[in-house]
Image 1 (spheres, one colour):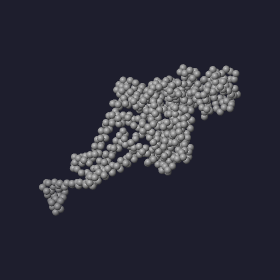
Image 2: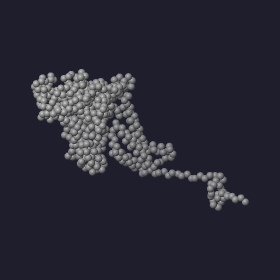
Image 3: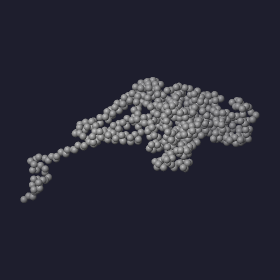
Image 4: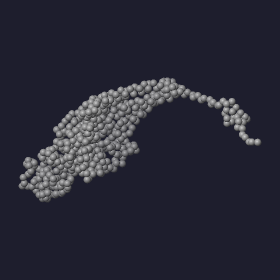
Length: 603
């Protein structure tokens, strides 16, 4: 008899169930009962819910405002982000406190719309404001307004920009200044372990000298915590001519800087006192008495809601006390109100659109742009930003350059066709290519009524090794020297040989003197293929530099000779390196050279 299992016996049999749900039910399947979701009860009444929603939104807004510091200003893009987030937070709170009521997708959508009507309307209004503001600021429609952001006057460079003496030429770039500052701080054992240097050096005129200044910063959060009660004890001043770095210690430390935290942080301090103002990046300056300040330029939008970025005054914050005041006309000691980025952007708008928007795309008549770099120079106790101007269709030559006062935005355009700054740097580097020096971005100087690029040549260690001068209009005229005096003397000679200046203008600037004396010592050196004779006279603290290329008779000089000699002195005494350029000599009994004869009577 075959053996089999009857699983159906488990269904409807003694066990009353089994594996087949259809058994015993005439083929009808099992349908589980539907679970109905219990609606969540709203919190309190409508008034209570509204208070809760507003309270949560307010707390979120305060925290966000404290952390992100948006300007409460319709011209500020971050304001709209802030407003959108507040609307979103209120909507989420309204849905949660009202109990998520509704059936199906349509029901929930209707519920959410009902709870978020006011935030939704605010959101739509903000979107409309952004759209209208963007259209009203669109450069396609407002090209004329953009081209007038920077008032420009044409000028004569050699007539308006005087030749400056060596004690006014800033010879340090930002990188070299930072190296000197770090080295100086490293010498101070009581500071180097606790503080570091802010990398944002500001070039200013301080007591008639071009310098770079910056503040100290705390080494880390722990060091801030242990030193914050006294504040930052000093700031740095780097003399750009003598290359001396000084740590200026303060009787009372600086407590309001960009390196601070919480309420003393400069950005937060500004925002709490001026919640509606927009600011450019603050810069560190010192007044003529050495008091440290932060200059916080106020940004305004002058075209539509978002276009035409400009500066309207500045807030000056005392870095020690935190006292602040807004000045629409800043004091004269302030050197930097307009940043280089704003100046260059405004000139680019002028260069692109002063003949109309369509001309910037088609035809491009007189369309110009600034070059890629800039530098600063001191003129009449103000700091001017310099940058070249080139045609939009050419990147190999400049058609001129602009000088802009960084305090007043007064801008002069000087037409001068010539090499770009990059081409001049390459030309200078090619003169010393065997040494692999790198040129810094050039300064623009007036040398013998010739626009001239002046730059430092740095070695691989980042230190300045030589200096170079390149003629703007004829950038094949390049001269270098171990000192600025040597460099300029060689450059003036090159200008004379090229017929750009007269022979009488080939001597370097400064007070020319003629004296007599006895030679005590002679040394020689070969620089750029030329032999230089360094002659020290008896009772003289320094050396006369005779370039054999200019004064071939210098080879005849010998110790003990009695001579008359001419030289140029830029300052009241011999410079630090003890070397001054000589302009000529003659032995006693000889007739003096014509260019020096008239000075003999005053010797």
